[in-house]
Image (cartoon, rainbow, N blue to C red):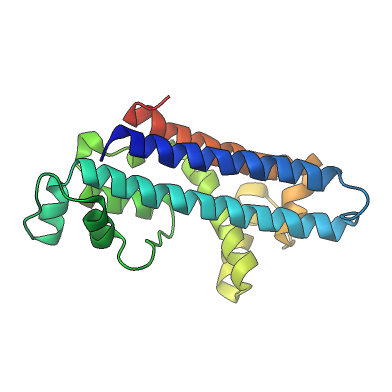
Amino acid sequence: MRKADLKKNHKLYEKWIGKFRVATEKYLKATYIISTVLEKRLLAETMVVRLCGNWEYLINEDLVSCVNKHPSKLSEYFGVKISKHPSKNLCRALIIGAGYKDFKNCANLIDYSKKVISDGCNPFPKISAANRKKVDEAFIIRNYVLHLSAVSKRRLKDIYTNDYKLRKFIEPGKFLLANKALRIWQYFKAFESAGNDIKKHIGIK
């Protein structure tokens, strides 16, 4: 791995967050085609799903890049001999496989990263606790929006009750756009800031 690889990962990640932000601002201000409260709420939910997808892209690419540069722990984890300069494709195949690596939350990501990346080279534990919390919240919203299952609804309701003191369940779109859409902008900020936490550790400006 070269540092340019990580820089490329973050450049694309930040580019799409910027596009999502501009689109969301337009949706919320629209008065003609997207005019009803329900339409705006549905679009807010969709944007959280896109933010989560963008984050998944980043952490998968950064995992591959970091392991490519520091493969010694990967050899230990899989119990096989890996060259000092493995190809990026080999690293991707080993840690991600044929699909994508699905992490349930930031703690899961950090635990896994410690198994395959040497301690001094691992940027993921550097994500702040505050950013981890907000990213995890966004994924709980995403899971409910995508699955509408009883389990995902219960987890979201727990967030509402414990962290926001809401007495009854409301759909995510209403939650996101309350108080002049304050919460959705907090999620934007958290995803941007979490990416910056990683960048700071690996020396990318």
